[in-house]
Image (cartoon, rainbow over all chains, first blue to last red; front, side, top):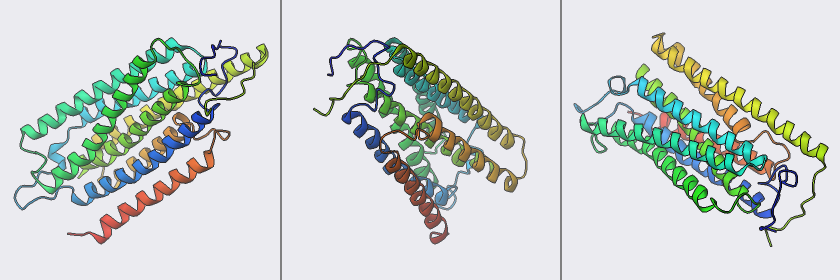
Length: 207
Length: 113
């Protein structure tokens, strides 16, 4: 069954949901995402209550720290990578393996761009004295945004592994759910970022 | 085995219909993407434009909410009613949202400075 060679004509309409394995993966990734929602909720709540706090005299304020142009470019990178991931899933449905690989790689590249900017941003903050242990504010900020960055790294490694492991295999019912689940996870990373750029950066600049 | 399933070949008409349907869905998703970019742009623009914070804050939170709903229901396929366990998935997501809200409430009312 797993080795069955398909043509676009025989390829099922929902390749990720045909097998029991695929169905289990589908609901499994969502249960994981919901536990992740709870994780990020606690980090967000911590950040909001500790923002601009610190040992007396050592406070940084979010108004002077954050720069909107950088946050805007990072947002564009991540939003666009969400679209490329959707395009990859479109090709998955049409049994176009090259399209899936190409657009998954495009997603990885955009994710790498985002990650590079985030590393630059963290480096800059540490450089001006806003290190992890500097204040309650800095710990809460780095934990929240750093956890999101860690999710991005995991997503990138995940998608790269998929692309390379399946390079010679072609599409089948064994790996179609894998691509699909990775795409769902990547969109979730984007969902978290929407809240980060709103709550951390935009509301931080507003004060 | 858990990978086994019945595969039925599709007729030419069914195949073409499927292709058209997924192309249409792709078009919708591109439109949703354009809306998301637009909302992001508005959110940043209102902050840069320097209106009163009490006025901007609810607006950018609302824009973020709309974006998240678009992501969940369009990009993450929560709108597909025939997907497996979609009821379980919706329940988990909304319970997750409720727990998230409880965190905000607890940390910002019970903890104070």
